[in-house]
Image (cartoon, rainbow, N blue to C red):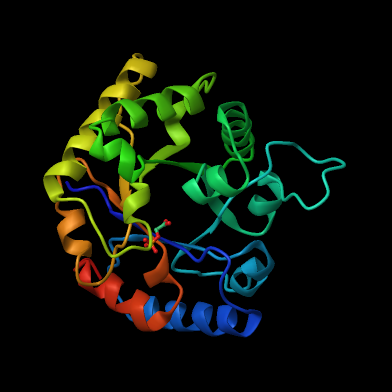
Length: 252
Ligand code: PGA
């Protein structure tokens, strides 16, 4: 049987409280109409709007954090811990998004700690990796991604809660996407690296694709062998684009 694909929306630093409430109600109503939803839909709003999503008990979608602190509770002004996300109803967290790596200088030791905190809190952790335009032009994409995985996953004891999002940086927010063959090659590279890092793990790691995913192209990515879902930025913030994207997956 085909595994249930993941559709994860990452709002980044967008939206408002009113928008979040409207979105949560609209998404819930839309998904409630479906008798047999065979998609795992996740939404990652900014921390400050998580509460707008918390209320409904029979929520048909998952809630996630865009990031978590590398620390457990303590004197870390401005940080939000993985256990706090869990407390707010989150079941997963993104770690190592390229915007965090770029703007917050997140390095391998930091990512290792964040992964550990996420797993300890009982969350699924979506580790984001991907090459720059220059690295792809130089043919360095597999080496780059493999190295990112080796660095971030060093010390991770149990990979059961792990998902990997392959997000080429040159595709994020640009309307440019890699060919299906290129995505398949990267999914294969990720799986190979994962097997090397965790030789005693029988299962494979779910690999998502992210970068300029829309209602128009989502089917193409979901059909790629080795791809278990998508991570959606821009098209996930508004119901006008997110609902058609969910419908386009054809699993609703
Ligand atoms: P995008 O963003 O869909 O707007 O390209 C993807 C992401 O950054 O996760």
